Image (cartoon, rainbow, N blue to C red; front, top):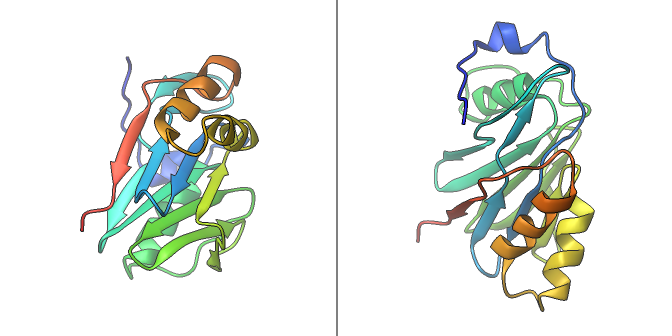
Length: 158
């Protein structure tokens, strides 16, 4: 497993597609993420989730946009350009989807998935009778070229 540190400035040069799988279920208070991080040239394992004020944020898309988005959430910047990226925010208030913008859209059903493996994750989760989001993401990692293990689980702290 290779971990790389990079500055926001160096990440701003990256343009990549939404490779990853992030699945969240408000009812269970859980967000599950694969570990695939890539630029146009390489792939490695890394973290695409952040905690802030009791909420869990999971990102797919441009890594630099995710970092700038989190700076904005923490009150340290202007609203970033967020086109081509997605974010799920899971908190005690519910599950929200930022779909290419800084506008939070409530997820009425309480279950959502984003990234290249998003649709497959919802399908696998439903096939598992909505009982095992971790296994759903593991299944996706076996079949989606943009997703890879290890699978990480983040739970709301109550």
